[in-house]
Length: 459
Image (cartoon, rainbow, N blue to C red; front, side, top):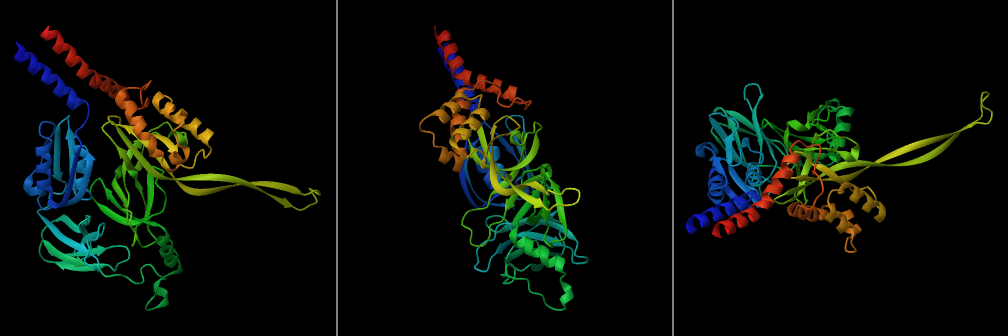
């Protein structure tokens, strides 16, 4: 009888442990086959997830990345990066990973700079030798590698990267080898025109000059197509405009159709570029109650909470007056008041409870520079979380630090969620929120229930 009691007690504790939070994994992959990396991950999460994939289908894709304290699905997404690979999670434990394209072959290669260092985010386009039509494309990884599915035939690989001359390579086999890029000395300097003066119009020169001031981005879409271009708007809306390179053909894309957007680091940058992914948000700061997709970058993650940030545009206003002289109709003249709005760049911050499908904003960095108005704004946003308000009211709360790093409140919010110290459903507009709220209560009750049942049975 005691053996059955012990087994039952262990089962209840095991269920409570799994339900209480995802196991986080950390690994450093350096030029490892995707198939081997998934096998290693599958062994580590055995009993929690079953990772299904075809070894031969993913063997050619090489992984070079550092995974730090990620859930298993998040780790796989990071490993996939820009590769044409999809991942789906069915139920609570089944993960399916597969190559999106079912082409018979794959063109492989490595792109390096003039010093032999790998170039990440280089754009590789496969062209048909007969008519120069694009037949495939992809982006290089951190190790400079690319793997592009294609039908085995002779193709031309066109490699482009900001600050370097375009490189063309005729490929007769599935191995493009190592492609060394050559610096374009004129790419970031004044435009140099050769040949007839009419070859470059004033409009083209104007757009090229503007592109130097815009941010270079690589965009990967849900269907694995890739474009590189220059961002013409910020990321505040559910659509973005991108100049695809020639300065004349800007295109507008729906955020919901984008898998990731990555800013390309400029030569000499030491800070790695941020990557943005679509997240559903309710932007209460802008007065909207309808959830829409926005491109956000992750700045915080735990077992219960995600924190995001996104570039934004804010405005400040000032007034000027002008005087128009006397006329026959108005001998005294007229004073006119003009309201001017000046735009400047800032950041928005969002939080999302894991299990909810919607993120909520909690700070627009330029808001409330005074300590009193800042606290009033924070307490209004986190009115359902007493511990957050208590932290903000405390003597140890550093308003200047918060203004510089608004994510410092996320650990406090995270602890409130883990302790269950909140007064209402986290996101009322999210149809999954009530279910998440109930699930958190059940999860936290399981260890206590297991202990009580075990004691009763022992008695």
